[in-house]
Length: 173
Image (cartoon, rainbow, N blue to C red; front, top):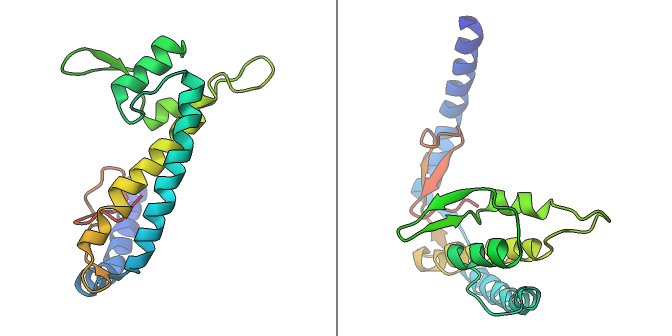
């Protein structure tokens, strides 16, 4: 019904119009941050990653590059026998997915007694999330701080999902 669609468009348009002044202000004046906090988060996250690594290696029985999709795919699917849910093509060969959605599906697999079929998946998810925070935020953002402020650029209409995006730097997670 056109009236319903038009009403939803009006609401969406009005909402975005109301947000624009706040976004412009943040772009111009910046977002205040505490630079020392990044170093503390970096140290704590790095320590947690070093704590998770041996737990993951112990379950697999050997060392591998956890952030390598190809090596993680080999471990999960070839060595541990996880069901091959989604495949994608790389330059050299086919690799089964290790993205967060696939890992979530694998984490949900349970044995007859209710225990996780692949307990390593929870550890890998924690590792990947912490590794992303470390590399994308705690290591990069401090280099972009200008006198205790970050100056991101907001894109209220850019994302296909309808949510706002942010870049230079991306401060979303």
